[in-house]
Length: 128
Image 1 (cartoon, rainbow, N blue to C red):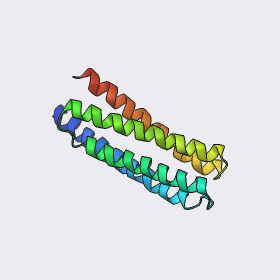
Image 2 (tube, one colour):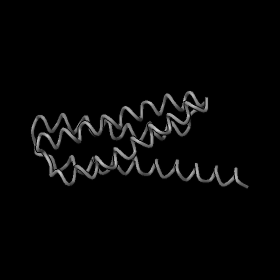
Image 3 (cartoon, helix red, strand yellow):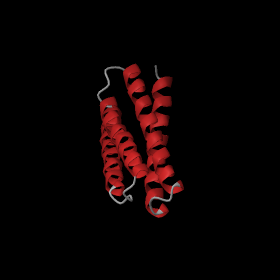
């Protein structure tokens, strides 16, 4: 009975994280539409959409990993892409391209997800 509950919890966590990473990507797509039209905004828009959508897509791929080592490797990519997303969000603030309040909410969610991914990598690595 305990094992069933644990598996159910893990599945719920997995789907919840898939939902959160996709939602983050969608929110980032929305805010990039508010950026001023300029060369630097084009570059930031392209890069942040790539990293945010890659975070979501690669997390989804990690859920279908063939082995624990494959899972760790895929989550490593998720960690890097999520961290890159935070970089681009922080750059938007530093360059004063968007209201800091809006961007800070996305940074907070990105940091929260990043902490989860790092903890998952550590846990999976210990269990090899």
